Length: 149
Image (tube, rainbow, N blue to C red; front, side, top):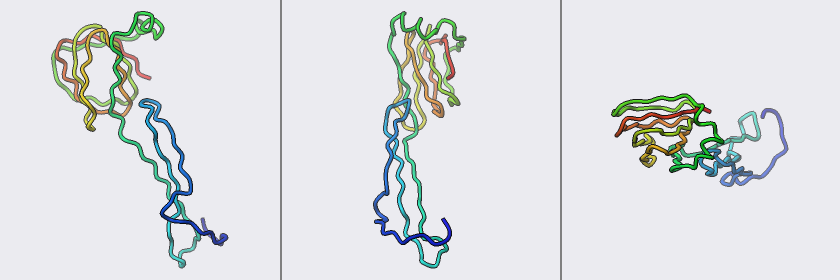
């Protein structure tokens, strides 16, 4: 803001307001605060705001153990493409959200950013968040349906 503005008194240590949003994947709050910043009187503006947003990196894999067949049908899982691999260990980064249904096999997925390792087995439905990097440790050959969204 440039030019002259009315003199306002703010406590620069307290936010003007905060907005709480919900992370659509983990349903955890994301805080957005707007606070005034103390400025020098010689600067050409009389007020300045800093916007800070914070949220922990999305590192959680959601696993639905052995969902009922009607859930699988409702999602159209059987029409999704398939992918498979043998016993192996490799890094992976999700550029988009992925939901997969494990037809065969067993894998342990460990998020890089300190998330908890999770075992996914045949018959499980798993959701991986966009932006998550992890290590796939395939313990038994995997065959899965997958859908990016």
